[in-house]
Length: 564
Image (cartoon, rainbow, N blue to C red; front, side):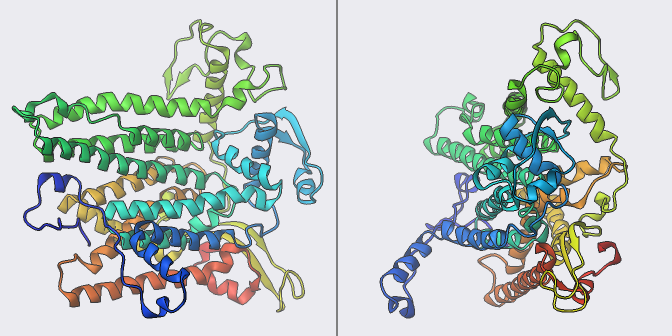
């Protein structure tokens, strides 16, 4: 695949250039005759786009993906699947500061467009509040209706397309491959559907991807600092110099910790990403020191781990605690504040009396603020819920089946008859089906095998980074074989699957120095794969958006009985 660009001056590549391969630079191309004859605007746009292609390409792909996501965003005009929880919890957060219970007929009253029947008695919830704060922001701006509670999800989905295009450009040092990554994410069905419903998992994906991008920026910034120090030549026996120990203030690393805190404050699965990315950035730093010639690179890496780990955890924990501000500020009067807010008022210890099976000493902890002890108790009950959720569900699936998309989730289904909901035949179907674009995911399985080869046999750090992100989002679910879980949780690691496919497509095209015939054949093959994936997305598009289609057309798209 296209590798790091060679220095323009020619000659051997220096250590500094190996540390920080140059980014692709846009260059102003001659304006085609047809564009020149169109007037003043198009030639100016052509020059701008070619010079700033590193931004123009990703923005164009993001606009394409955004147009798909915002079109008919309010349809189906209904509260679908778990929107019945999160849309209402989000509204309560913005008005009460905490989640509250709702009357049984609340959904009917909300969809009628009348008065929103908000109550103040607290509700027991099992997920932190960040995702619901974001959903509620759309409701505050646009109203308590489907478009209002979905609009922020569509915005985050669109921005994530821009992010992955820029991340792919930096990771592969290719604007073209970055745009390919953005295009593939635009046409993944699971990402598309999750961008159009008010659930929490797309928010998890957004902060996950943001943290990865920020760590990539930190990697380049840190290596650029080492390269500058090598060029300056500190004098003396620099291999032993103490300046290896301190690699700058690392603003991008701390920003990544903030993103991981926000991810964890949406769903607890963010804690696995925090651990994985901490190990990833420590390994990156150790590799940079080793490449630059530090003799004790492993010792500096160990110190970095001891120093960076607790700080990243502290930053993420502070963000997590801050996300509960509304709950902290709520009343401690019984039934008038957040759920469990008054638990510690008349208790001296903690609950439960064990953690992960280990007994906890029951001592006087009244010196710990009541609010923190109440929050601990609340989280203990949330943990018990998550680890003992085994009630069967029609659409539950095992993580072993996620990569092949064996059991999608139906968020919405109707069977309109002729003359209703746009049905023009005797029987029709309307469905919103949470399923990834099948051919993209099946290609992704091959791409993951390729990345494993690149990482294990060729020590390609890019493949390792992609696999690290995918492992952090995917592997933890295997420890919950008995828990009720769903395939849409996989949206968190979709970007890393897309990056794996992009890396494989880049390898098909080949490096810049390969024979022209080889690159043409590879480009044709890669282009055909992209076109087939895009066709596959368009084929399933009616099932992603709840369009009314003939029942025979719906059955034709049920490729496997497990999809019904």
